[in-house]
Length: 447
Image (cartoon, rainbow, N blue to C red):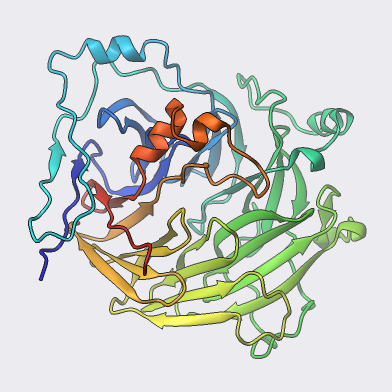
């Protein structure tokens, strides 16, 4: 039998357990956040850290890109919006290193029994580091339940008018010293409600004014799903995913008691606060709710095509939910698969929508087929719990349906296209052992 695969590169620049990993949209940068509130930006071409700073007073829950800059959330109950990284001196910084690192070759997928040689970066920094980005704005949030923020871009044809945005901006006072996000792309940011950890607030970007307050506050059930009658509504929210379905706003929610719900709002742009009975025209409604776990859900992800959601929890179940079946009484919507591991920390679907990866508390990463749940193998490197996973964007950047690429990006001749092509088949994991492992997966096209 072939030897177990090994990561082809390992990064060790964090001094505390990893909490979150994210690719840049172009796949050339890796953002990583740890338990002490530090964020590092790694150049994946050089395999070297180019910037690192203390972003939060407590552990980092999530990091992502927005409008050229960064968004970060910490256990210190705040979300920061950062300016784009100042890369003007990046090439000079790289050339100033006294001993330029050898660029590790990317291994080709192989079924050979010869193990892949792992390259370890023991001093993974470029001197001097780039300065950390400036904080443009901050938003207080509720991080009691370890739930990461969710953000989605508003389609241009559905965006608010300039007059409406100006009116919304007047409602909010920015923190002292913060210049604000400007008037760039429009988006929506979802986080747990400041007071009620079992409900959700949605803010408009870039104005950072609250559009929807506690919309999951649902004392009277809006659906009748078998087995959910009289269900307790006080469980903490553990996962959020926002997306647009046609011109309607939808959100998938995962809860501490093991259930998942799909909510829809139409029209999305009207302000609502169900507790105050405000905004009946844009009232949210729950399309369905399912309970797939007996323990707390630890992580949730949605496939790039928005057709499936997956959850893992403190139990041994990997659960798939069909997001295209929207009727409350459909009993074929949810499917469970019993893994061999009790306790899982993260779950991610790759950009092709064919592979789902599960990070276990035992440090192993288990790969499954999205459609059949067939086991595709196990990756073992981390000495302790594997806390976070990330797949790269695909060559089209996981754009919205109908949005086309330029010819350069499509054929991989632009810098963005080349970076996405290089990262194709990668999986990056971060663990409690403070290590970041970069894996090259085999081609599972026929699985």
